Image (cartoon, rainbow, N blue to C red):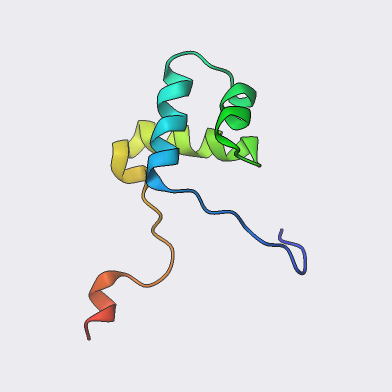
Amino acid sequence: MAKKGQTFCSYSLDTKKKAVDMRLQGMTKKQVAEALGIADIGRLKVWMRKYREQGDTGLIDQRGRSKETLHI
């Protein structure tokens, strides 16, 4: 659960793809997090699961309004 006043980091699609590639090459989560400056190592686990299930499209951030609703 988020704490009051907590700020969240968002990462670009490029960073997520680099992280997944590094993990597939055999680097540990800790090594990848240090190399790319990722604060939460658990995010890597989530990105890997989404990548395995959906490929590159699983790494796209889908929070917020969809582009379809913005044109109404």
